[in-house]
Image 1: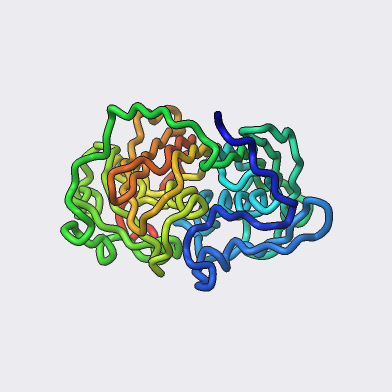
Image 2: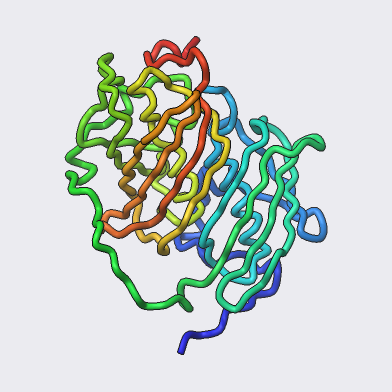
Length: 295
């Protein structure tokens, strides 16, 4: 028989974070919040996660909301996040208002809205649970991609275009250098890439949720470097215990300027950490050449 859901007093903080909490990392500081009463939180959006669009990355915005929800949650672990972006966030203060939708024995659900200067920026629905009270049935016939270890892969740091602060937040290693980085786009919108926080922060759900939206864009292989996320859904599949994570990134359909992007995130032991799917709109005129990023 499964254990009942763990009920924690609101404000106790989420035990989901498994890294040494005495060590502060860049992401922890970038998503820190202060309660403003009720289930409201005040955050400071930083430009350190800005993209080629010169706006904060959608995965980072998702992490801002998720950390606030986890402080309110009756369960310690995120299970899924579905977030819709109404407009880009801007560096500066922001408010997150959280509503408890349902508290269940196994799964609880919360509604959260991030606003800046009274304007809604993003709306998220977050489901939480407790991995310690989860089931035991597993069937995973589709394993992790077979790639060399990070230390045996190409360091993309010197090849990825400058001008995107978000790329300084991570270290990237790939078994193959994608065509657009060598000036020869292949037209194949798929990649495999190891990713690690630049400050070597161990991966937890908060970082995994940010990582799925932090990979070099596979749409650059068809001549488009920048896009804006409209909707992002992340499913968390286990408590991570890793520093490096392997991303399998693929865009299958680009129609009328909108494109999907699916990401599988695996740990160093070949275990699935997270799945994500997003819908984004290509930025018109954003070419794949590195020089375009500096313009």
